[in-house]
Structure formats: C-alpha cells, structure tokens
Amino acid sequence: MTSSQKAQLKSEITAMPRWLRRSIGKASELSTVQRIIKQRQIHTICEEGRCPNRGECYAQKTATFLLMGPICTRSCAFCQVDKGHAPMPMDSDEPQKVAEAVQLLGLRYVVLTSVARDDLPDQGSGQFVKTMETIRKLNPETQIEVLTPDFWGGVGAGEQGQRQRINMVVNAKPACYNHNVETVRRLTGPVRRGAKYDRSLLVLQVVKEIDSTIPTKSGLMLGHGETLEEIIETMADLRQVGCDRLTVGQYMRPSLEHLPVQKYWTPQEFDELGNTAQKMGFSHVRCGPLVRSSYHAGAHYSGSQLNPIHEE
Image 1 (cartoon, rainbow, N blue to C red):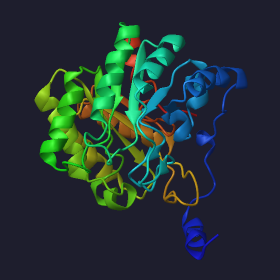
Image 2: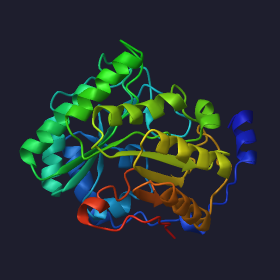
Image 3: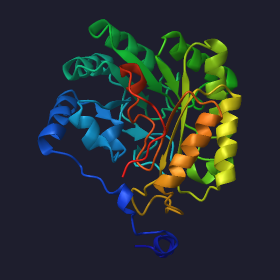
Image 4: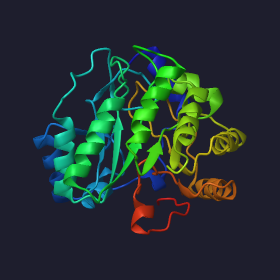
C-alpha cells in the first residue's frame, strides 16, 4: 500500500453503517441470470459495477445490460468498471445476444447502458439503436430505458456531434432517457474525470428539445463531500432542463484505487431529500442509501409506487 493510499484510508469513514449491509442473495437465483449472461458473452453493469442490489435484481430475473464491452475509455474516480485506452472490439452480434437474454428472462422492462467509447466515431450511439431494434423484434411488448454516456469526445467531438448522437437514440423512442450527473457541480472534476457538469445537463436538455414526450432521468451518488445546499442546487439545475425522474444513492468505495467516502448519509436524510425532490416537481423519485440509477427502473411501468425510499 502506498503512502497516498494510507492517507486516503485515514480520511475515509471505514465503518460501514448497518443500513448498507445487504445479503448477496441465493446462489441458485444468482446463477440463472449469470448463466444466461456468460453463455452469450455479454455484460451487465450489475456485475461490472459490483452493484449491491444485484442479488435482489437477479432473484427477480432482471439485469441492466452493459453494451460495448466491460472497459471504459473514461476514468471516473468512483466507478468500479475497468478503465483503459484499448477497449474490446465491437461485437456485431451483441444486439442479438442481448435480445435473446431479454427473451429468456421474460423482461417487460429493460435498461440498456454502456461504457464510454470515445474511441468510436459515433461514441456507441448506433449500438444503442441496433440493440433496441433487435430487442423489439424478439420482445415487442418490452419497454426499453437507456442510460447513456454524454456522447462527447473522440472523432467529431463537440456539441454538434453530441446532438447528432443523442438524436439517433431519441429517434429510437426509448421509454425513458437516463443520463447521470452523478455529483454536484463543484465535485464533478475530481469525481467524473473526462466529464463536465454542464455537458451532462445539456444531454438531458437536448433530449427534451428533440422529443418532449420522452421522460428524462438523472442520478446522484452522495458521499463525496457535497453539502445539502449543493444537492438541492443540483436538483434545481436538473428541473431547469426538464428532467422528470431522479435517483439518489450512497457512494460506496469499490477499492483503495477509488475516492474515499467522506460521509454516509442516513436513511432519514435520504427521505428528506426525496421529499424535497418531489416538492420540486420530479414525477418519479427513488432516494435511499442503496438506490442506484436502474434500481426498480420499471416499477412505474408495472404500476408500483415510486415514492422516496430507503433500504434498511
């Protein structure tokens, strides 16, 4: 362990609160989804991101599919997904493989996300569209939510290219378009390396400009040292660009190579934030320590209540 890592450990609150301890789930329930995924050599953010809810989601035979491989060209300091400048080659069969997995799992609502692919001319927007089209061929009743990167960078970097890529995905008519700001403006630099706060807000704004009928969604991970005032300011910024839905969860440090946790927000504080978000006009709010951006994403589709929650 390096001296800097030791210093980070000293600044981190290492005792995990009881409300963040969660069972991984039954092995038999986990294996069903894992087998379907591994047989097709596709990926889920549930596994690559070490999501604390994967046991619950796998037991319900749901998963969030991670497109375009498990290696990201960005290097966000909070994320478990592997980083690198040489991501995997694109798999032309991936849309079919994902569609088959959706069919086998019997999913009525599915979330598609991806690593950032700054190495690709279209940043991967075309793969989102192809996968959506293929899923619908095999599963015409399935609703599809997308959680995209900002589509900025690489060949044709800039706002015009970003708008063109977002337009491709919006025209494929997702049930919801999600892009996470992840943290407050002040902390975006150290937390989301390669991303910009206003650039992420622009993604959500452009979606609404193209098709105002598509719900937009964003998420925050707390625990990096943000203040209550900054969180509320971020919520207001999201509402300003027409963001409809919000998720707020607790950051949990994946390894010593990642940012230390500065604060564990309590379930009561999450409830208060959720109530504030609802008063600000968000139509759907998920707010709790173990909430992640795709957690119970299809609950509104199945008729479940989407009030602020916390998980004990």
